[in-house]
Every structure is written in structure tokens, then in C-alpha cells.
Image (tube, rainbow, N blue to C red; front, side, top):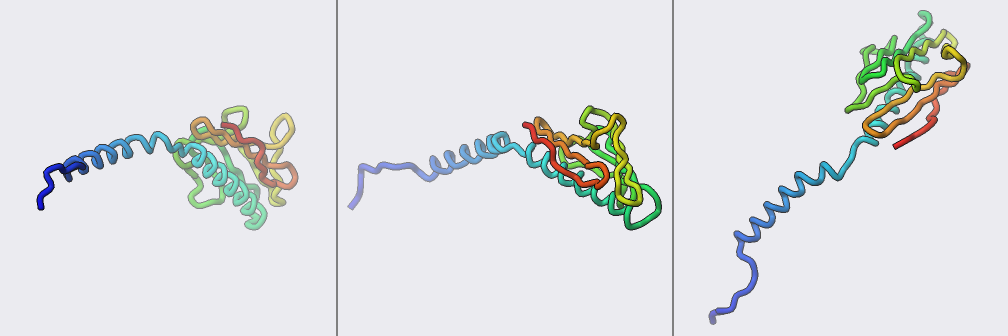
Length: 150
């Protein structure tokens, strides 16, 4: 018995449609998924961890004060850590909240030097449109999250 009235798609037509969908997916999905927030979060966690590590170096190594310096670009210097020059992930940058360079020096008790003008030291980490601000409290050196803006 032969069917003369066949309906449906041929294998060639199905393969062409699958290829077109694959090409669309490869080009559209990266544009839909933004990793900027993830990069800013990762960079801020890295900075907070390194601030705590420099503080620990100042307390436990007892070779004098240790400094961490943020220059407002994709890298910063953490004295006492290996390697001392640290690079942030992606397009993230770290610097003082007011912009520019910021140095935080911890004495052998783990106390950070207060910034000129008073208050606490603040480091802003930015990636794309996302910005996170970390604050290093005077006397204790505790690192806290201040703000998160998109």
C-alpha cells in the first residue's frame, strides 16, 4: 500500500531549521546574559579578602606595617602577599570612592591608618555599570559592604 498524500518535513528541511536555530542561539545568548554583576561581585570579594590578608600579615609577621594600594585601575598592590601585584577579573577596577589612588596601611596591631579628613577607608570596585563599595573600619580593620549600585 502506497501513500500518495504525504505531509510533513523532509530531513533536509529539518536540518536547515536546526542549523538556523543554532546560529541564532550562538549569537543571541551571549548578548542576553550579562556577567557584569558577577564580575563586580567577584572583584569586590577578592579585594575584601586581600585587605584581610594584608592585615593578617601586618599582625602575625611582625615585620612592620603592611600596605595595600589601589590605583584606580585593573590592578592593585598588596604588600606581603605573593604575588604582590593583584589583577582584578574582567573589566573590573578598584580605587578610592572619590576616585584616584588609595593606600591603606595596617600597623602591627592590625589597625588601618585613617584617611585624611577622617572617616573610614572606602574602596569602590566597579565593573561595567555595577559598583560595590567596601569600607575598612578604623581601629578594627573590619571590612564591610557599604553599597551596591547598578
